[in-house]
Length: 458
Image (cartoon, rainbow, N blue to C red; front, side, top):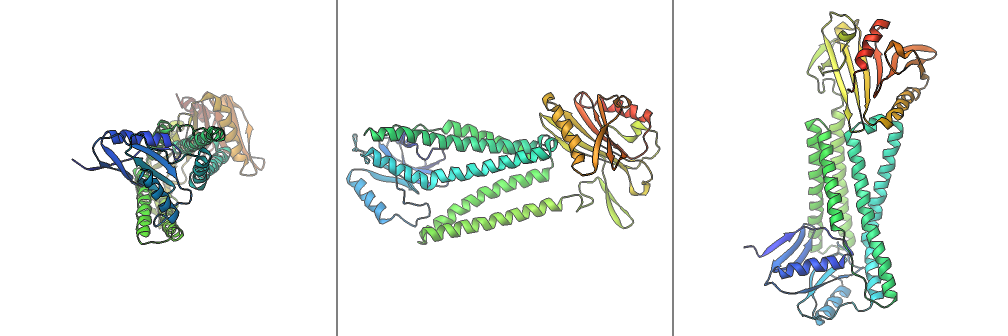
């Protein structure tokens, strides 16, 4: 039977009532808090007993201090004379216990007690939430900036929606914490001004667990949505690296404290090494991403490669919903077909292409983008986004043309410098297709292609 155990549990910094209740319940089960670490709270086995706990705060303390200051030591001596023994401390939070059945409270002045708690909160607790809350808001702004410039691309990629969910979850978590504390502080100030005891705190651990579960599920979904095993593995490795880095930072800081480094030196060294290792990881990830770009690696993700005039080319055989052979008669059989895109519950966007190998460039080629709008209210947004995408290039615009040739509801043809281009935007019931044949397509072929495209998304 083990004489110690380690527990991981969430708590709010200011939730004195919740922490006190939790620790007193553990004491009744025969466990006494011994220390608080970055790897959990450590308990020592004792005989089950009714032990009283109280949570105090020391604003001048830091997680990087090599040891307690003279003021902290004096405060501990005062507490010990009152029967309160230090169980554990972590930065500004200090937890004392008392085995007396009716102990005298450590704090007797509500206004002074509230001021101490608020000073401790302003030093570390609230700034942390403001920092991460600001970061999350910046990420949200960036998301909507991207959405305005690439409406379809953003909403059709699962990783984008997962990222949005992650940042929204973080904002909900941070705002819930901050609002909870500020609400309690307002009530506590009113009580202190009346000379009454500070009101009990109400933790939000269930709220935290739910949001963290959502965040974890979102991260798992993002890894799955990356599609290719290599990318998913890279994501998992990144998470493991971050956890290992956090553990290393804690270990390093503790080691520096034992070597009696000052709090300032400890924090500078710890954060300096953390930043350096984070930059190294970022560089490795960037290198891996750029190394996988097809333009840098011609045969990337190809079924096989071949040489043509001293240059390596990749051949793909991705299934595509409409082929050149479906539209026109051809005896050519050496094609490379590619499909790329993504799908969410809102819409899907896939780009398809069919091209002859390099020794058959006199044969036609075909490329088209299919946007399947699953949420009808987004149809016009998608159409406007696709119409506007070409105009952003400068000198290009879509002009209306006869949709009956394609069996479409609406049809537009691309123009540049007052000349027609062989690209059409075709609107069907729930699907919009940007169609680009690289040959002089006939009216009969338009009708055949339109019949196939009208069935997309069904």
